[in-house]
Amino acid sequence: MHRKTTQAASDAVPPDAPRRALFTALWLWRVCPSALCRRQKACRGDTNRCLEERWHPLVPPELKALVQKTLANEAAGMTLQEAAAAAQASLAANRLQAEAFDAPAARPFVPMRTQTRALPDGGNEPPAGPNPRPPRHRGPRMRTL
Image 1 (tube, rainbow, N blue to C red):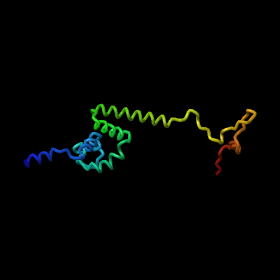
Image 2: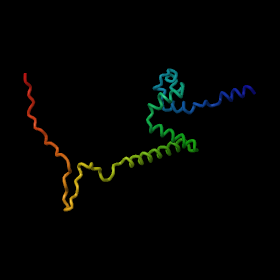
Image 3: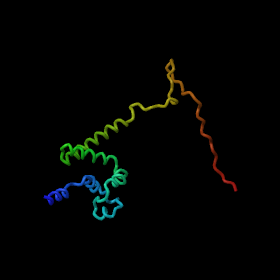
Image 4: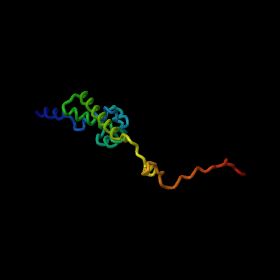
C-alpha cells in the first residue's frame, strides 16, 4: 500500500508543469541564464522568476493574448486546433475594431486660427491675428580670414 501512494505522488503533475511547458514551447530557454535550461533545451528553472524576467519583457502583448485566449478556449472544451483558430479570429476582430476606433474622422479637423468666418454678405473674412513675416533674404555666406 505504501508503494502505491508514493508512486501516485510521484506520478502527480507538478503545479508549474503547464507554465514550464509553455516556456519550453516558446523557446525561452534560449535566453535563460540557467545553463541547465540551455543544456536540456527546456525550461528547468524557477518558473516564477522566468515569468517575471523573460515572459513579461520579451514576449509581445499580442502573443500573450493569443496564448491566454487559446488556453481559455481549450479549458472550455475545444480541441487545441479549434481553440487556436477561435483565439486568432477573436484577436483579428479586436484588431479590426481597434483600427476602426483609431481611424480619422471623415472631415479633417481644422484648427480655429486657420478657419475663416462667413460674413453676412456671403464672403469670407481672413483669419484674425498677426500676418506671418515674409522669409528674410540671406546672401551668400562668406568667411573672412
